[in-house]
Length: 262
Image (cartoon, rainbow, N blue to C red; front, side):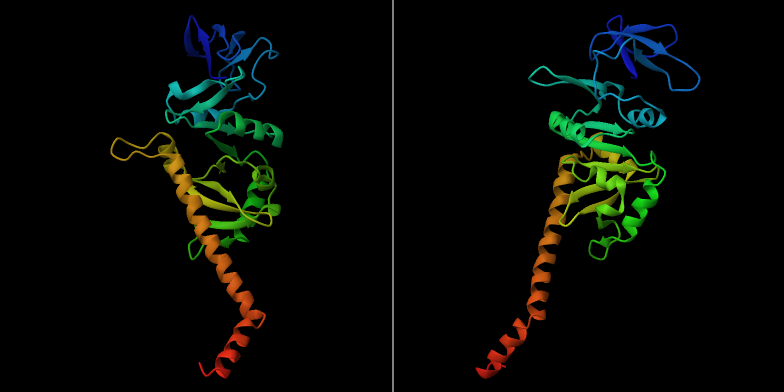
């Protein structure tokens, strides 16, 4: 963890310091070696957050995009259960940066626990993930004439299979200038994937600027509305084509001719 409580204040790890975990109150030691990022470690993990994972440079870099007062925030539920969120914005969004593997059960638990949750998933963890993802994207069907959003088959990519069931917004990070947004699921094992600029994603979660306030909830509502409209239109077109294929149109045309309308 990046922060522990030292003499009543949140502090980052420094050589020689000892503190207390802000989640469980148990003693922590500052680990300040030359290989891993400096961090706080429990003397024992027995009493602490079971959702916590060891951090690396990827975690720290993402946290660094947000104010320190938003980082590692204890989230307390009404029934007394507490977990430490990676980041909690002033708009109430919890951001979880996920590098390691996570079970579907734990993912669903976090979705339910935090409510307003957005995932940023490290797509570089598995060597074949980017290759599989790129193949799924290349085989996908674009939304209209644009290239920014496509519907892709989940089975083409293990990363998509792992995360397709989440109810929270998910952004895959492959170390590029764009993130890949799993916007919504569709039918028959398919999901909608969209490109989203990394810088704009950070700006949205930071609330935008005084001149242009931004909210992730508004963006999600707009995007899903666009997809719903598109899919509804496509279903109507597919139904129309099906009627043409089964001869309904031609039977209608024949009836019209007999009645002198054509």
